[in-house]
Image 1 (tube, rainbow, N blue to C red):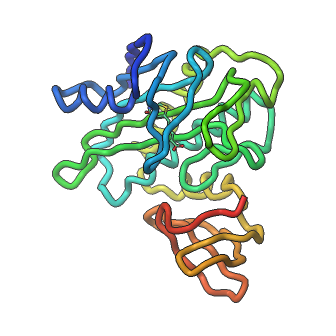
Image 2: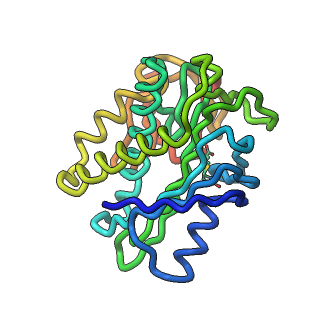
Image 3: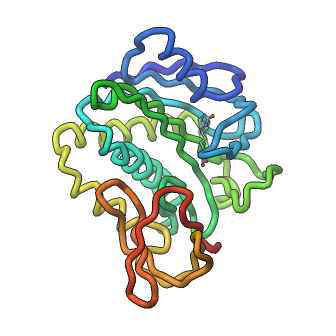
Length: 247
Ligand code: BTN
């Protein structure tokens, strides 16, 4: 895949921009919309994504994984989360980087990156996948009410090159994506993803529609839903937003 990066000085949301482009005309796989100043970044659900001008990595990438059936959408989240995990681990030289299900990247108990995947399904396959990535790099103060943001500079005490991080991330995504094409049976991906999950196999409190309970994350099902074993042995399965972690 060839990446083509378009840098836009200031833009409300790279995901929205890329979405508008593809709804106007067919765009090639590998198109990247990158900005230094995202003024109305979108998070998952109704969240906003804070990013100080010139300090962070905010971009969206177009993939066209038409070899994937809609029920396999979660593999995109997996290859992207693992790519960010590796780049953060390498640059921070830290084993504390992990994936908070479904697709937040955490260092210890703080969030360093977020991913917003928006797919278009056509003829029972994924025709377009708009993948937005926000990585906190050189921002030292966060002003939104996001509960636990952290940046690379806060952790390492030095500035990082945003351009270099973008290139490293794209390389890593390409590697995982080409592997996915060749090995679409995703057991290699599932085990890598699960072993790097935040709080895997450890007992913590969660909250679901029935209230607070103690349990242990034991993995994910075939659709990427989270499996938690309660302390009484019962196994519960959750879709996004159906369960909250107690931080
Ligand atoms: C989340 O953690 O809730 C997801 C955050 C995703 C933020 C990125 S920044 C680049 C891209 N453009 C957006 O508007 N959002 C994503």
